[in-house]
Length: 402
Ligand code: ATP
Ligand code: MG
Image (tube, rainbow, N blue to C red; front, side, top):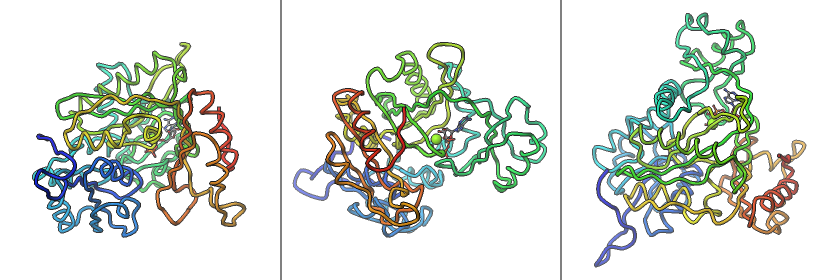
C-alpha cells in the first residue's frame, strides 16, 4: 500500500475515487455508507443480486468471489479494495493486490481464515503480550484423536476453516465422542479447544495504517447466546482497567506482528485464575470490522467503518472518541416469529425510547438466527444506557442480561 486516495470530485471535475469491497453483507453495507458519506464512490462484489451492500453501492458486480471477469471489473473500477467477508479466497486478494492497493493483505487474511494458523500466531504473539490462546490440539487425521490429552476434555471441536456464529462446532464431553463429532464435521481439519469456564467475553477493534500507526476503539464487553453475539456494552467503569489495558496491548501486538493494514477485531475470553479480575485468553480474530463494533457508528466520533475507509484510502487514522455510553442489541430473524406465526417487531415502541438508534440491513427474509439488524442505545452513562436497552429488549421480547 502506498499513496493516499482522496475523496470527492477531483480538481477540474471527474468521477470521485471508488473504494471496492469483497462481500455484500451488512458489514459491506455499513462500509459503503461510510465511504459514500465521505464522498467516495463504492463498489461491491457479491453474487447475490439483492445483497445488503450491493443494493446501496454505486456499482454492484454480481459474480462469484473467484470469477475472473467479475474481479477484473472490480479492479478496473476501484482505486483500492477491502473485504468484509473473511472467507474470500486469500488468492483472490493476492491477485488483486498485484494491481491495486488491497487491505487487509492476503497473508493476514489467510491466517485469520484458519484456526490452526490463527492459534499459532496468537501463541507467538503471547511471547510479547503474555496473552495466549486456549489450550488446544490440531486434529487432521484419525491418529490425532488418540493423541488428544485428557486435559482438553470437555472441549469444543471446531472446524479449522469456514466457521461463524458458532457453526462448524461440536461440544465433546468424553473421549469416545470425539470420533463421532469429527465425522459429523466431515473429517476436515479441526482444532479441539478445552471448554473454558467463561467469566466474560471482550473484544478489541484496532485500525492500523501502512505506516504502522494504530488507533483503537474502547474495549467492548460481549454476551453471546447460542454461539451468536447478542449484546455488546461499552462504557466507562464497565471493565477492570487492567484487563482492558491488557486486551488492548495484546491486540496491538497481534496486529503489528501480522504487519496488518486495515481494521482488525480480536475476541478474548475472561477466565478465572484466582485473581480478582480474572485472566485473558485470546479466542479468535476477524480481519475486518466486527459485529461488536457496530455501536461505534452511534457512540463514537469515528466509527469502525470510517476507520476501514481511512485505512484503505491511506488517510490519517485519528483516535476515535466515545462520546456516549453504548449498549448494542443484535436483532436476529427470530424477532419476526412468535409461536410459528410471522410478526412485525414493535419498532415504534422501541423508537419511542430515548437514545435508540435502529439499523436494519435491508434483508427481506427473516430466518431464525439470521442477523437482520442491530440497535444501539446511547446515553450519558452506562447505567442509563443499560436501563433503556433492557426496556428496548423487553419491548422486542429479548431476554434480559446482567
Ligand atoms: P464468530 O461468529 O465470532 O466468528 P465462531 O463461530 O467463529 O464465531 P467462536 O468465537 O469460536 O465461534 O465461538 C463462539 C462462542 O462460543 C464464543 O464467543 C464463546 O461464547 C463460546 N466458546 C467458543 N470457544 C469456547 C471455549 N473454548 N470455551 C468456552 N466457550 C467457548
Ligand atoms: Mg467468535
